[in-house]
Amino acid sequence: METNRLKHLYVEELKDLYSAENQMVKALPKMIKAASSEDLRAGFEEHLEQTKGHVSRLEEIFKALGESPKGKKCKGMEGLIKEGGEMIEGTPSPEELDAGLISAAQRVEHYEIAGYGCVSTYAKLLGEDEAASVLRETLEEEKKTDEKLTQLAERINLEAADSEDSEEGNRMPRKAKTARA
Image 1: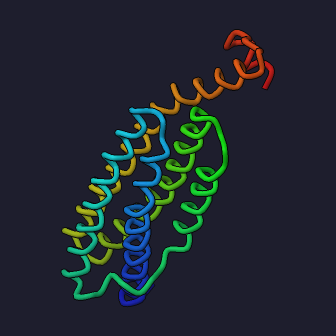
Image 2: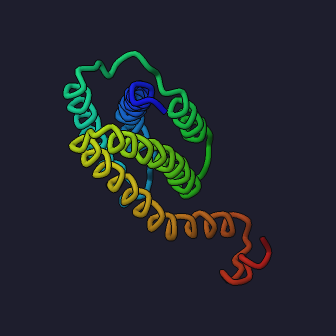
């Protein structure tokens, strides 16, 4: 692939990530408000601050490239946020909502991990070493957030399962629960 074509793709993908991160800056406060778990709420608050930092990093990369970050709407993130919003608008139990919020957040993280993985590779191939380093740093932060969400899910998903069983009057031992699935 010619370098100028790769650079065009690189800039377009950076714009997509910039849009995605800005959409998350707007969506995370709604997720914070909807979460009933203190740990989950704290995790979302921490990620909101981190996401604001991601936006700033991308702005610095655009400045160094002499490009504008504007002009593209990330439709993938828009869809992921819409799905998460529909869940919040539903009437799940607090435990089910927290489990669903984690699921929605992990979809977002996986989307961002894919995006940052690609642009950091493009930056390296284009000789944009400083940008590549910054993008890899963001990639690692996204991976760590995903790991934290997985740790929270281990407890919160069980709470949602226990909540369902207590509502049904069906207090089966945990091993039996997994066997019936």
